[in-house]
Image (cartoon, rainbow, N blue to C red):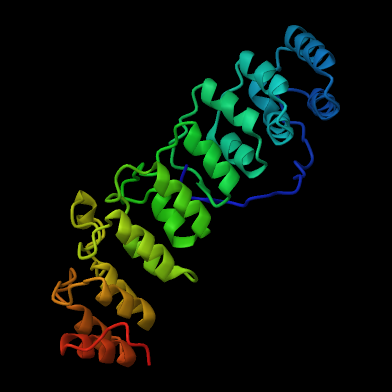
Length: 287
């Protein structure tokens, strides 16, 4: 559960035209198989594949991808199983489609057939499907090589209800650079930051400080959540982080403090807030 966004609802897709590929399963068989899948006629579907498999040396089960996609959308596990039992390979694209269409039975079958629910392919923004994934063993802290987790993705863009749900399943608040992602939200930023800080998210840790991938991202000015808020010019977030104990003296990977970074980016209002706090002013005193 990670990386690409899947909407909470989806309209039926059009799988498009089926073309004849030389030396492969005939177009007529694939068209008929799709019709039978759409109508739910599993016995004729089996008979069709049995006949094609025994009478044509050009039959290839891998050619039934469009039919598998249709079965996933319909949550027609009986058709999916029929294809898989005949050697059709599982692929993460079908898990992505099953999530998009809320085909929970299809997802359960894919897991049964060996799909890794923690494979980094999809991020969920829908509360219903998030619950399903978490209940079936999805790890909200599963890292990619740059320390992006499902929870990282969620705190940066998902509804607050989804974040709260994922936090209930989360045993460790440290992976995923959560505060840094939350700072970039377009709405509910302080509410999400408050949830994370209350859970124990580290406030003054520079991004990727503990990871070997720091060497990969060394061209970026990697700093604390306060650095990121200053960079984005989010004055209200800067005030909030200061009120929670954000340390202005921490330097980013370019050797800059938050106020030096803000000054260099001409974020004058941010600079004024930082100066006021450094001089003993109240950071939550909104103008």
